[in-house]
Image (tube, rainbow, N blue to C red; front, side):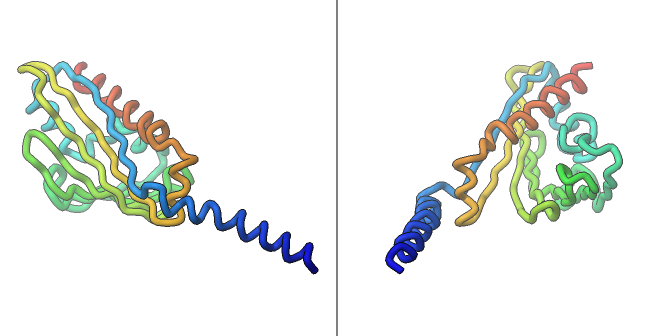
Length: 179
């Protein structure tokens, strides 16, 4: 009986350690990538503010050529929603809504993922003039994981996972706009 109690105590401790550790781990994460495009700021922003244009540069928009997409509202305006649905587990289903625009400079999105997991996160794109013919584009993503799932932040490299996809999209955006 003493051995069983010791085994149970060890099991409880092993289970408790990660849960206690998760109390001290950040719940928020942010990833941001940049690219310089040889075009004026107004021209770059005028392109990126339209969600439908993401089909031409976003890695995620092109992961499943068979995914269905629907749109609601006027593209390039606050309230426009772009939704997707895919049988590919990597793509899943969700929607993206323009929640604010600082004309010529910044656009903010709310991303609502439905499958393969439910989550609401925020993303943004910023176009900053370097000079009259060069623009720096910043694409960022902010996420949040509740306790105890925030423990995954220790094991998952969101900077690498999301950052590589953001950078792939920005590099493609550069090609599209500079051609």
